[in-house]
Length: 440
Ligand SMILES: NC(=O)c1ccc[n+]([C@@H]2O[C@H](COP(=O)([O-])OP(=O)(O)OC[C@H]3O[C@@H](n4cnc5c(N)ncnc54)[C@H](O)[C@@H]3O)[C@@H](O)[C@H]2O)c1
Image (cartoon, rainbow, N blue to C red; front, side, top):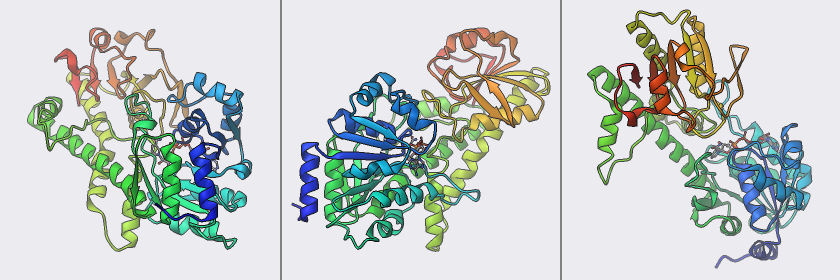
């Protein structure tokens, strides 16, 4: 049993009864599913997003996020269970506030926590006794205690007694239908045991399992370790792909057979590079923080070098494939399949596809693309519009380049109709080997 102050006990009861109002700051890939989950569980939810186009769209009941269907969002908005505003000032009635704003990198790959600072300042303006604030944005160990705590303690309110502060990393995998929000255990670290208890209670209303840890720093580190683990392992298989090519064997066959080992091995897939808001950025939050403590992270730098080199490696695969057919990249017609950073989503943040298309264009190729989830992109200042998979004539291209394995791309048709394929995702792997299909 955690000893609670009067404010803590009151909040505990409101959370248990689900009469508390939950505020969510930042309604993107992380915040919107969370706001919807709380609203569906019976909480009154107030969301705030400063993007001038997003708040009106959501307030209208329209969802821009694949994992939140408009059919689910619209009734919650219409029934007043989820209200959306463009300013954090609207959160003055919220008992528990969760912050889910972006944490990108600056120009020298240093953490840019300006969104967290702005959100915390906004929350600070409406902060009052009895409130719980949880930071979910991925960030370096120490952010919650060093950046948020002083802002909320300003009025002389004592943490753990008059207000409560915790960190709980978001671990969702957009587009993953198997591991939805409720089924992903939630790690929670509080500034004090009361903070941790109340934050755990909040998440326990919508998530099957809460994993308490000893501090906010440990919770912050857990998330960075998870994504560094992925980044390093992806770098390892990317390098394995390069080595297998040199030695004349299929990396996919090697990984597939290795994955038959029932213990001590976990398969990762090579590809054209890592993208999205998390993997390319999060490990740098860790290496930046440890550098301040006098330690230079080695695996992170090495993984970054290998993963960051994959777009160029793919461009070289394309150059070689065309060359083998006595063609040059210059003046060739190339169709890129998929520009989102991974299958099933329309997120192009840090997508390696954009770098690859740009590099091919710079070498004189004419590049079109198809992505059912991304209607248009900007490459080198020019807008490209997506062709449609059903209508595009694959046979008219010198080469079709698979960059994202969206389910819509029928591999049978691809192998049948395209003249030459470079497949960076093994989308065609189940169909066997073909002379005109080159895999990473
Ligand atoms: N996308 C993922 O798969 C994922 C998974 C786990 C963790 N995360 C982490 O979660 C955090 C959020 O990521 P995301 O993908 O949801 O970002 P996102 O860009 O999709 O959404 C963030 C939203 O916050 C809004 N915002 C920014 N500043 C604000 C402010 N001061 N007040 C109110 N709203 C504000 C933005 O307008 C945007 O709509 C990041 O730290 C990210 O690393 C992301």
